[in-house]
Amino acid sequence: MTLSELSDRLGRPSLWISRMRKQFGLPVLEQYPESYETFLRKIRDLKNLGVSEEKLVNLWDLERKLIDILHLDLGDGNLSNIQGCSVEADPEKRLLLSNADLGVPLMAFDLQAGLDFQQRPSELFEGKEMGEDSLRVLHEYRKLLHGISEIIIRESKILFEGLRWQKSVGLDCLD
Image (cartoon, rainbow, N blue to C red):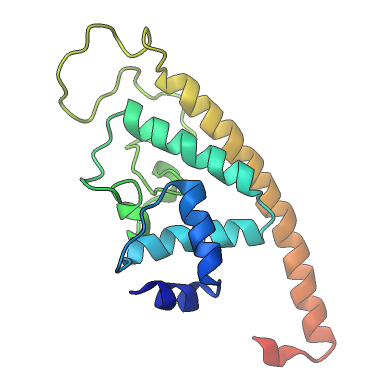
């Protein structure tokens, strides 16, 4: 789909898409795949639920770190981190924005340290000595995700109250 079509489908102006593209480090394309739309839809919906852009960018940065540290094979190219966004999957085992599969429940505390899903040439130092620590990053991710979940729950209650009020004043036609 073109930028104009993407804008129409998301209900957001092209300028909003451009800003999100910059903040999340997404490429500019001639034709946008479904996964691109799904990723931006997640961002839009989370923002509508009161999650700040700062929290979303921090979550995205942590997801990309986890994908890199765990060597998750998400495909090649500049869209590899969002290619799985439009795939139906078990949300308990997937990262929120990228939809990357960890293979274990996200909130589980039994992630095997040093887990590597892709063969790579040996490094001179282990990842931990280089400053990479998958368990530390996963802990930060879980903490941020928990905070986002609390925001969503709180805002959902307010939205449901608003929808009930809408029906009580005869505005059912807005469905």
